[in-house]
Image (tube, rainbow, N blue to C red):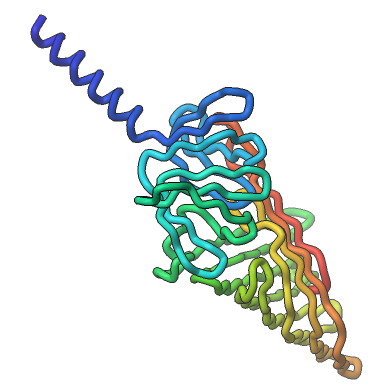
Length: 287
């Protein structure tokens, strides 16, 4: 009986501790969600739960947020503030700084992110990337071989971002090459005011069966990030670019021209039993 009592006491202590360490979000319909807030920007809040995975909740659906411990707020001007609680009322963030006697209100446009990652504070780098490769070997009547490769790598630190991405395709049929092309692009940008950023890009491409020995495109640009979060990214970039085409059998060409890029990717809201999915869309004169 004494052993059972001790076990029950231990369970209650653990349960109480779990309740204490949890952050809580009160939804506008009266529901309450508890878990660990892992990211919050001006568009949404990401809440990591043990019962439904990581949820992305729009600010318009949030009534109040209660934090278990103080969080850091990174402002657009690069300064930081430690707060005990925060909320959003229309176009204003209501922040309660640690040790302050009253809350502080400021426009949403002045807040970059609440609880930023280390690289956003200038502490280290954030590396992300992906590599997809496909190899197909068919024997028999067709005797075909295919090699497909595409990759993307991103390095972010404070206001800077460096991306490298490209693809390769090489196919043969009955020992003869039918496709032989590759491309790679380097893009770097730096935020200078709010969601605006400077950019510079360089692209190289080769396509033997399009008579293209090497295409080179390089130039500066200016862009605007409409959304920049784990769940949604959307940016538009434009600028003057120099393009030079070296052909295999025809005269080479070179000229200056205008270029624009639309880059979009998102992670749809998923339930606990659904695997991760990503939707990406890239438009513009890149290749």
